[in-house]
Image (cartoon, rainbow, N blue to C red):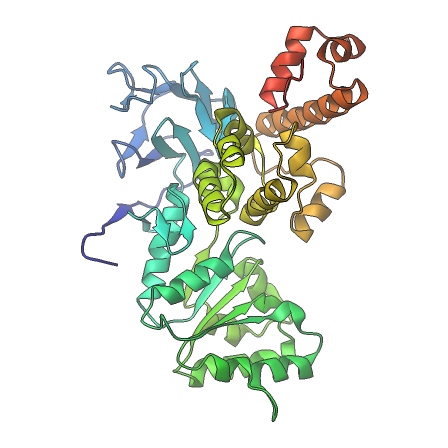
Length: 438
């Protein structure tokens, strides 16, 4: 990191989880905007937030409405947020909400200001890099800037790194970025993909080589060995990798898995001494649904790298397109976003129905299996109302797509056959990014 760059360090106290006990106060932390880094105690309810001076939390941010939102408690003591008809809306994980129940450490976006509420933090620091790009990895949301800070630390050392996160979140890209920002830049960056290992002998040959070919360890000498999907490394080969980590000081080791570290710690077939050795530094790559505000930035970067035609790039940057893409849940993460752009290029046309276009875009195997189970991806990790609204939107989009196809894209005929008003149908078409052909 150069001397002109800075990092943002937000020191957090250990706050006990809310609920179940009198006298406990909720806290919130501002992670972006004019008050970045400041922590506040929610001293009463309703607790109002806005740019007006009469709010409990007044923020001098022109993108925040005078009375933007309020925090309240329901009859069970759970913390909820209500949007107060703000101009720019109140968003949770990139989805605008009118009212929602807040889980611990929920990131809420109010214009250019972001807050974490209620703050329940076991770690003493939440540190963010000032950078919005680390190598080829980009983003300006607090969660990815925290990743960039950890990556900067990793690049400055030779310690082994474990990257965790769902498929498609960019673990291999970040590993390459760490290598290219380190003193080993210019030396080999070798990828060892454990998904390809069929048995122990094959794994040993790929790792150690044989009389005819060099193994990954020899190829990576002086550089970095990236071991992808380390959870798929055969159990009998795991001690061999541990031995290499402990003896090969000429190699920097970065490993990756889509499993959480706690899953590996509990797995009977994963060698625990190896887990200790590879996780000196641990970086969790967030799924795209947790950083939806980065979608426009990522999309523009992908379009530039793939030299997308001007008319297609213009469509990608339209407000209506971006609004839909920020509502979408991205089960395939950044890989799915990149595949969407590649498909746009291949077809060389603007899709009439963004939703249908996305549904036909390849995702990760896990995402496809999850969606195939019941048509809708339902998870209880967010408030009931938010999940319900997403399912309703998915139904509306699929219904509209089929309705318009059955009626040759005729709006009036489609409205009559659906039994709804023509103006209401047009409003839905605009909402879901479908072109009105009349």
